[in-house]
Image (cartoon, rainbow, N blue to C red; front, side, top):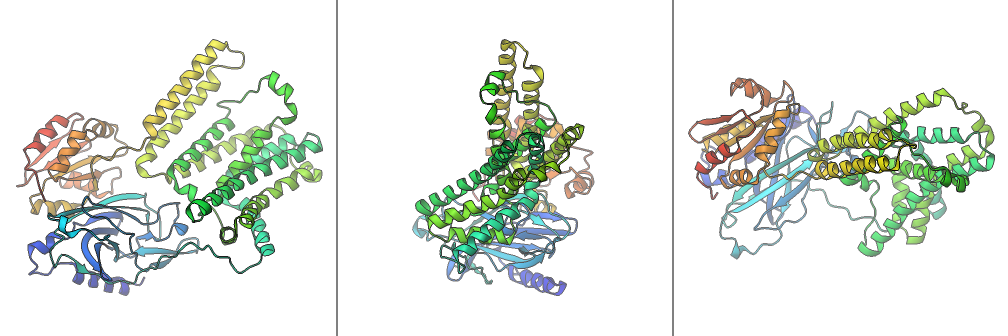
Length: 594
């Protein structure tokens, strides 16, 4: 977007949405306050709510205003991390909502040279109402819209955000709804019709798509594990080598068989299709996969070992290693799914547009294509003989693989929603400690009683920590990011403001969260008294809240909470357990009905 275009749009939006000098107070009250969604240096984006009418329907317009380089992702298929396209979740006790209507997106060329669809600068998203019963709406309507997504600039991507916009207005006023105009994006229904290329071509495309998965960055972490397993089997007989390759291939095909089964269920039960990589948009799945990679990494570091009793291995020596090899293949296929080139998407799309039998065959062909190289590698002795002989290098390589797995696990944790991310990181540490207890505190020769006690303690610690750390935290208070403009506007309107200055590195701040702001009675009073709550993040020196803490409020450090009262007075708390004092001050405030 050119500077001229950005300037023109900015001027237009100012003329369209900023009240004129003679606008009455009632009109300005029907527009929500600006909330900053994202900021990086001079780049910013903010949004507010406004009652609106679009193409004959009443609803809520989400008005975005910002600079042209900071952008949001418009489509799930082109986000840098799964599930972080721009999303809206409206809520109201009086109204119901239809699906949001999005404007036409812009094309942005990311650093890799790929064109992606984004929203940037000034734009509007319209959320229509489902037809309400106007006769029962006799008082002002309260609406909250939760916005989630990922904001990026041409240089970097910011942490995923979750913001809530609020609005109160009189639904029955004739002039409450302002008309908005923009070019909308027409939603596309899932393609359930056959594409125009023949079966043989599609199956070949599926095989080629499967082969391409072996060069995907997502699957690289597991490939060293496969190499290690093949090297370990290189000294075995030819039949064992081939069997190991087939077992790994079977694990891959087993995963794609699960996808085919899911596709059948969705077709028959819901008349819809399976979206490629959808599982990585599920935070629970991403958390499980990240923890699996942590466990594998700790195994590479010899924090714990899996010992098979001689009585078992002696009876089943011919199958030793097969379950692990199948599981490795299954894991490799899972990790490959978030990365896909156009050829893979085309093959999968064709499969979902066919009757169930050819669709199932095509999906399995993708798995077969991914597994073929490993069968060939283990079936041709000459290839295995070129691999290095087992030796000390394998132990170094094993440790290197452990670091690679840790790095990928950390990356996966970064795409977990922000409210759960810290808990997952801490739980990964707990899992490591529990595995160390399991494998390091007792060994194969330890007494059975000691083994039982230590390992039960390890399991209990992991379970209790999992419930504590992985449970999504309750969002009792609707915290907004620090915004000096909104705080100043609230002061002009004699509206009380609560600011909690905190930092990620501040342990005392964590204690304040638990002892004060996790209390339901505090949260209920903040809501009842219509107190605007801001969280001032001072983690870095150049954050706006950091500068405001010293320059505006004259405070040397965190934690500090400031309650700004109507009339310009403020009350400050620097300790950790001031909940009762805060409650006392909040109760003195008048309850607000609007």
